[in-house]
Image 1: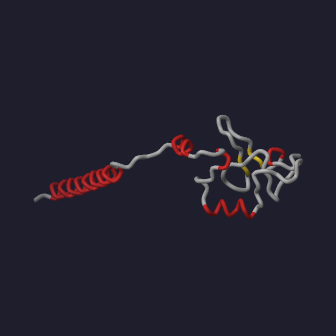
Image 2: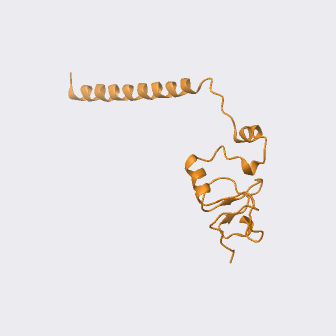
Length: 121
């Protein structure tokens, strides 16, 4: 067998093996996703029956702990110091009921408060 033929056979073999691996990988991914129902964000929010600004299901335990350590409260005990007039507050985006905070993840009430309240200035 000529050297040119052996190189062609080697390339052909490697190409076939690579394609076969990709087909098996794609097939296994397809099979693993069969029968699983994905819920959209809207469906998850509809399942929550309370105030959407109190829905913390999507917030990690670490972030919940951070919220607690920062002393976040959904309603401020100090009338003039609320999240909506805090420099760290992120106003609600269009179509969203709740704002956010630079310090932690998750929904934040506009009338909320934490110990790191900083006046806008």
